[in-house]
Length: 146
Image (cartoon, rainbow, N blue to C red; front, side, top):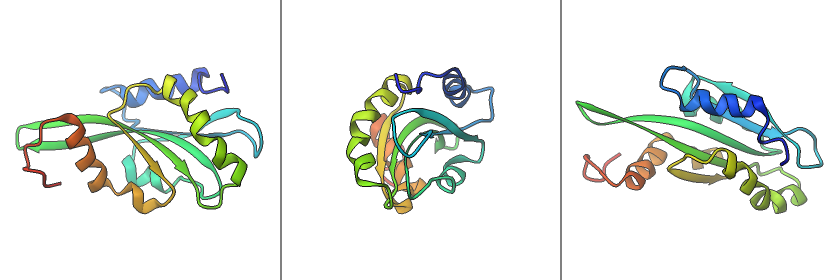
């Protein structure tokens, strides 16, 4: 399957999903400029802001991130987002194949509330992503405010 089901990717996925692990994001990249072999390139515990700093403008990358936010003073929600990053300097053939190859990634990183397709870091604003997660979750205790 292109390497997305490699043991290190599966272990990182479980770490991000675990309430007992501080890892809250993972990043999958292509092993080479050509071909469809995917590898785990990084993991981290610094949230979406840290993840965004690791994205490569010359690559297609797939990220999985844990997002925690409060609905009110008493409750906290945990949701997951799948990010399909297509850097603006990515070669045209790699861009063209991204949607097809994303299907394999979605089968392995299957538990997420939203998918975010991005080609600009501004597409990954944490407040916007939280607003989308609130809508996807159905309950919005803030009356639509982020």
